[in-house]
Picture 1 (cartoon, one colour):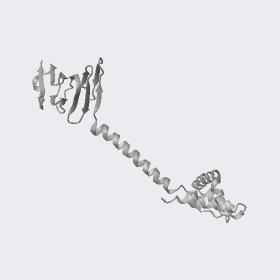
Picture 2 (cartoon, one colour; picture 1 turned 90 degrees about the vertical axis):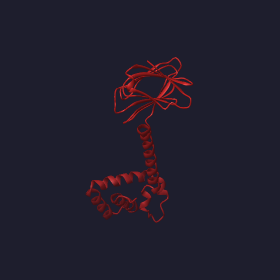
Picture 3 (cartoon, one colour; picture 1 turned 90 degrees about the horizontal axis):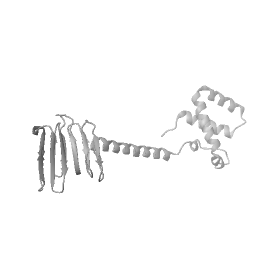
Picture 4 (tube, helix red, strand yellow; picture 1 turned 60 degrees about the vertical axis):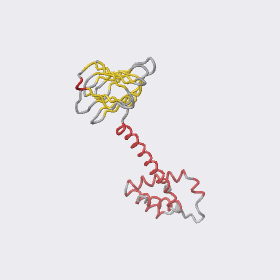
Length: 216
């Protein structure tokens, strides 16, 4: 990466004035350059401050007092480290964004003896019974809930464009707007409908010897 022309010129003036501090012609020319542009003054003062703090650089100066202006510039590997850090940060941000928007699953659970009411972003409500766990994801074309264990009662916000699907074991309970409860036991999935009619509730995917009981 090339240095800024003003910074490059400032470094030359800094080295020249350090090598010939009593030269009146140099001092006059330097003042003209310094006052010609506010950027000149800012760049020079920054370099001079760094120079004064860098006593070790003065100790390494050769006897002929010639100094390479590149010594005053940050090492190039600092730029590489900065770029690498920026890339890592960008990857982390992209990973979090992907997890939240593409995966989007939220986990809710209760301990033994506990109860919890969860309001999803579409307005649907889950009442989670004791020692239960669900995972929910509200998408643009479907609302999905996975009952991992226990029992949940679902009051579904009406939306025919986005079916509300509760998966338990190998059973899927699909609704567009109703209230029902799903309980998962070792060998059985129980569904109890408290609101709505049969035409807004569908069951699918009963496999592997699982039983599904439907109650009103």
